[in-house]
Length: 366
Image (tube, rainbow, N blue to C red; front, side):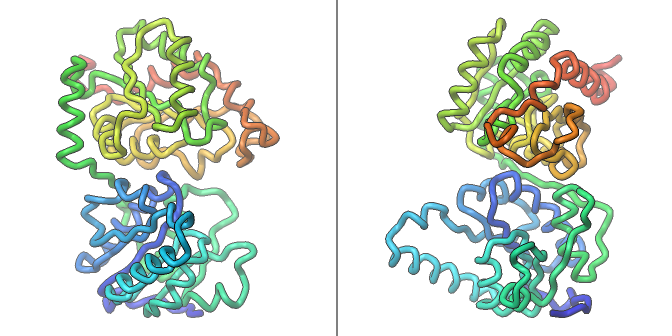
């Protein structure tokens, strides 16, 4: 394992590996941006899961995206091997000089060994400090014990390589002209123009991260009484759609419901046209930050220091519980988070009002 800085000038191609869920993948975008800022002619590829492709495609900092289908594990062993071999052949053909592995997934270590780049960097992980993990990479790094934003933790990989990072570390997400056109047409049929509505995405694939439906319904009623138009979104999963159905039943005012109807790129385009985003710790919250839309976010068991909206005007709402962030699936892993239930509706309404006032355009405030 090397302690020396790398010679980035000698590198032609790099591969960044991030095999996680949507929000985690999107938060790697600043790593691509920083590498391209440091060496504009460097070709930087991504390896991620198929279902996260839309969050990185069209990103101008990424040369090629290689994907792994999560469904492969359910296919016949021969099919799995054939697809893995095809991926390996494709990656070998790219002849990477640098591999940056941003999770503890063993596939990244195997690829570092099989692709034999000049440099390969990964984080040290408890339980993966053995000789095999260490021998897979030329550079290993630790992150400080004090919690920092996940973007900064990702960028620690570049710091470990001896690179001096620029001040600008943008989180980029490109919806694309097709998605933007479809969203424009849908909004037109609803009588909504850009910046005339709020997007509320109150769910997550993990429902223990959600503010209670009763609280959210009261907040949306309050905002509706102020004349604010609300567009509600959610993922297509049955439990998220059921959550939205309960919300609509509780709300006293009609809501524009697009839950389960948008692709990831269409959701990004919608959020980009919104005046404000309201949601929980989830991928759409990070999408809002990437689109430059101000964010009001509710945090419970997960850590806001690690996952807060990145470099966008925001208000993060938490309850003063000494046990949070606990990282559990609700209190005692019981799927219900008391810390979220203790965030008051009035507190949330004040946060929304303050952020709307803070981000109002000069024309709107005059």
